[in-house]
Image (cartoon, rainbow, N blue to C red):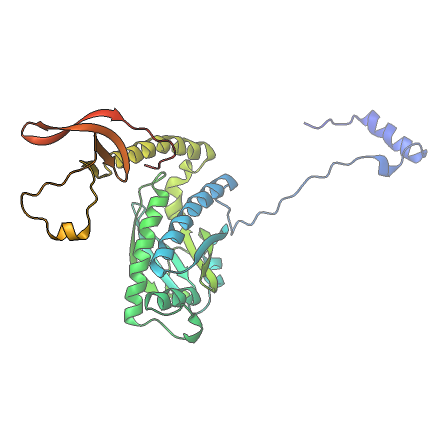
Amino acid sequence: MADILSQQEIDALLSAINNGELKASDVNVKEEKIKVYDFKRAMRYSKEQLRSITRIHENFTRMLTSYLSAQLRTYVQIEIDLVEQVTYHEFIASLPSKTILNIFDVKPMDGKLVLEVNPIVAYAMLERLLGGQGDPSARDGSLTEIEMVLMQKVLRKTFDLYQNAWRNFEKLTVKWEAIESNPQFIQIASSNDTVIVIALRVTIGETTDRMTLCLPHLIVEPVLPKLSNQQWFSFTTKTSVPQQEKLQQNLDNVRVPVIAELGRATLPVSEIINLQIGDVIGIETNKLQVKVGQFTRFLGNPGIQKGHYAVQVDQVINTEGDDL
């Protein structure tokens, strides 16, 4: 708490200023900082929570980049342009009058989110899917029924990836519900509700524009306690071990050909053509070579085990520099 001057100290200070012993400019007056707060636009999310949401969507953009690159068979780059909280009215007002809006139902929140795809991006995707070069400049109209089905197919897979991006925090089920071209016809939140807007800069070949994701507070609110840095690192630690175990499991299930090579012989073509049943081919070998994949890893002797041909391993070969 700041010190309060007594009446005697105040009189002494005024006297010093009047006598010229002290200048008024020498007296430090502490100004109170005033922060403007707009009650119509409540900021519900802390910077820490917004950073966690940014990390989640960075993971989503990496997966989406890989998926679209494979589907469109061209250069695709997706990056986050911004993550901010605005009112739903501001989000709708920022959209062009004619665009492609995809509405998704989110469980267990019983809410809806919107993905706005700029027509330039949508047409570039459709051009590639339909065998074109991805040039959207020739397009100037709404989507045909076939194009709408193609967009739905791509976006359904996109939001399978979106569910994976959130899985460490919440098990979401995201289902495509509808497509709309006029922003005024969709209402997933009230005008003054706070929403999180994630703008993605999308590059497909030579075309660059935006996709924008809108998350209403109804969807984000249940996971807010999990969006702290402490929770983020906790989830990272917990999931790293299962991922390693899963990787080990997958490696254990990889099928690798194992071949026991009796030996080799070199014959001219004329002799190969004249081979008959019962002919004997001499081979040059002392030990059977047991190959794992393309590499010889063991030497052994032939034999029989329980009525089946077998190899008794006598020597293990470890060759440095081979890639298994």
